[in-house]
Image 1: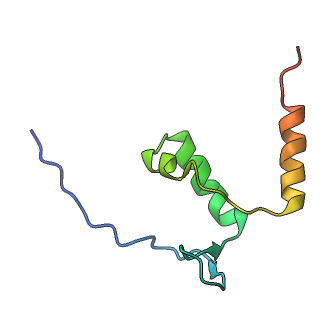
Image 2 (image 1 turned 30 degrees about the vertical axis):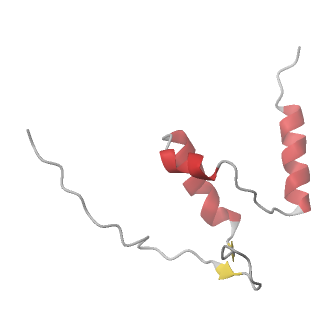
Image 3 (image 1 turned 180 degrees about the horizontal axis):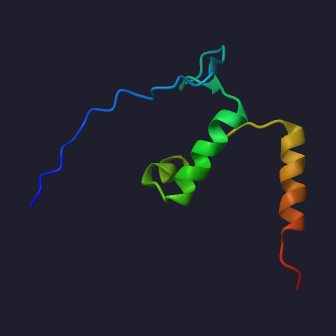
Length: 81
C-alpha cells in the first residue's frame, strides 16, 4: 500500500487584498472584498469542507444594501405553496 506524504501548508500563494481593521478586538479583523471570499466559500460548501463548520457560529458584518438584497432573494426563492 502506498504511503501518503504530508506536506506543510505555508498559506495561499496568491495574496488576498485584505485590510486590517483598527481597534483592539480579541481577534484581529480584516476587510476583504466579497469577490475574494465568495468563490472560496462556495467551493468549500460545495465540497463539504469540515473547516467551514468551525465558523458556522461566527458572525459577519455586511453592508445594509447587501443584507436587503439577500432578504429579497430569500423571499422570492421560496417555493410557492
